Amino acid sequence: MHKNRESVGVVLDVDETLVLSVKRHYEVLTTLGKSLGWKNLPTFEQVLQMGGTHHAYGHYPRYAEINAEICAAEWFNRGLEVIPAAREAMDAIGSQVFFYLTTRPASMTRLTYEELLQAGFPDRPVIARPSSVPLKKTAEWKFSVLADQAQKLRNPLELIDDSVTTHLEIVRRRDRSVGTQLYAGAITPPHPTAVNWQEIVQRLGFLR
Ligand SMILES: [Mg+2]
Image 1: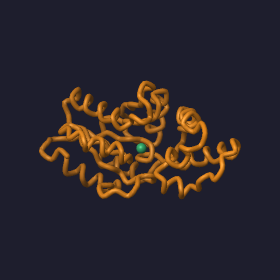
Image 2 (image 1 turned 120 degrees about the vertical axis):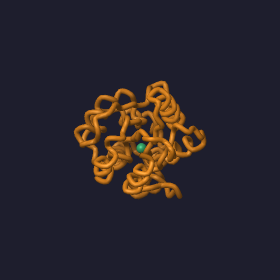
Image 3 (image 1 turned 135 degrees about the horizontal axis):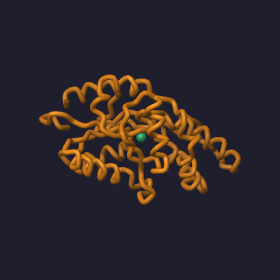
Image 4 (image 1 turned 30 degrees about the vertical axis):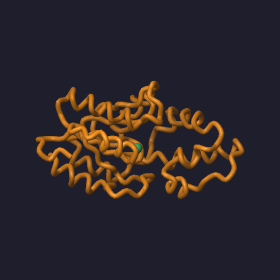
């Protein structure tokens, strides 16, 4: 939190914060899993309860490889369902948004930018995960990008993200220029600090 600062720059995560990718993810993995002979495939409810596809399918053979291919596919990332409350929140906080920060592979940067624009989100740069950063290092990578950018832009930044791991990493770092708000998304496990979009808008109003 940066209560005494003049203005906080908002940084937005993409998947499960602005658009819903987990549903498509589940559908694709179910079809694929059946064709590959994966046994005891989870239901959509179970995927949500387990905190997303990595937890729900991680034990199946070649999941990591198959999943990386899916996430880097154009067809997978086009036309995803927008979270209405996130889109509405932009009317209030859109002008505060500095950039998007996503764990999608860097090859998806342009597509993600186009899709966000098309969905009515603010026209801002997209920073996606370079191939040198493994998926498991997403939280550390997001923090380092935020710290670098806050310094470069000479402005404190506040990340809105549905990942508890990323949220806790930012809290742990105690960097005064990097704040975090945990969005209670579809696969976010219950967490005492998780908030919905309305609450996020209210909080950012105080930080303005
Ligand atoms: Mg996310």
